[in-house]
Length: 221
Image (cartoon, rainbow, N blue to C red; front, side):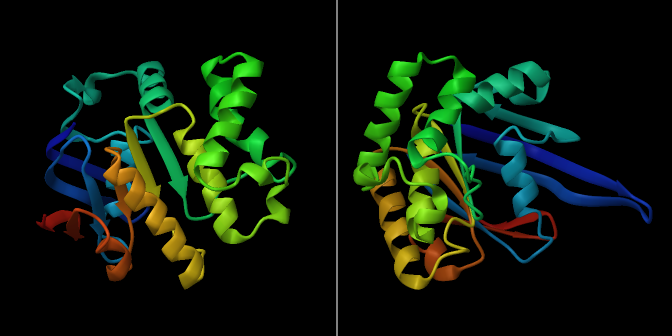
């Protein structure tokens, strides 16, 4: 599903050009649950952003389901990102003034889904993550684990082929973190392709495979 060959990325700073990714090659099969690990500055977040079409590489090739992503313009990247990729972030990124259901609806608003269908599907996704009775609660009325469940429901609402999770348990206590990882494990077992960035070995161990980055290079996969 994901095919990356000799990917390179550099950032220009006042101190000069800083290489972040150095000739990274990586493949992820459809239905695989892959964790990316590495120290701060290893390039794991940059790699995640490129795979998620939030950033672009300076060199190399990235293909998503056989389509050359490196050749796409901004509009095509946005369409691919919106329709085929879902994101879960450490900080949840929920809109505070909106209910859980309204937060889950947001990706469908951008996708042009009709209002009635949005409400129905949002409640279906919330029920699937165990929050069917919390649909009208605001984020502030939910625990951290519940907020992350809302974020996962939102990421899945357009039925993306790839789910990208950036430190999904980083803001949670061990109990809530375990519940979230059990949910990810169930999604993986159901055939969802998952890419997760984490610095926690016990969390990474729940994946099918661990990719280690160091100084912008894959050192183990």
